[in-house]
Length: 116
Image (cartoon, rainbow, N blue to C red; front, side):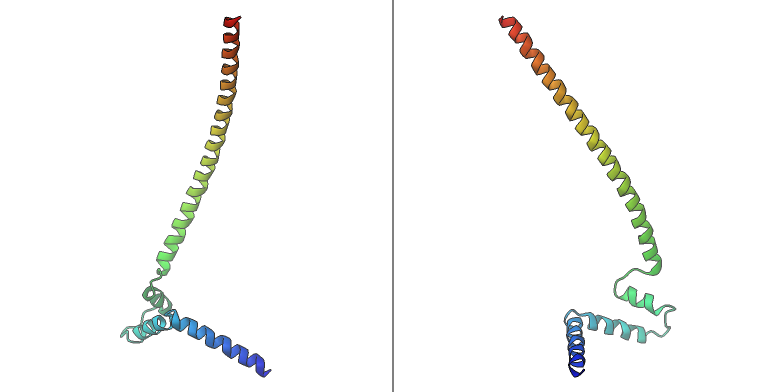
């Protein structure tokens, strides 16, 4: 039981050091101090913190989600069009190869006839 608590404490300490070394604790402390020092507290503390940390507001987030959805639809349409065009290109290449082979065969036959 004691070993479990020691492992748990070691994990907590390692995580705390990770947050500290990556600057997370400092950034959060600054944002929380900024929130504390606000004379008029914002209606949404969470949005305030998100904005101070560089994240989008809720309305910006929703706008970005809509834009992403629209772009995904455009991407899917363009991808489908691309696949269709690639298929047509392969068909044209195949037809060209058949035509080239036929022309080569015909010109060889004509040349053979001229030489005979």
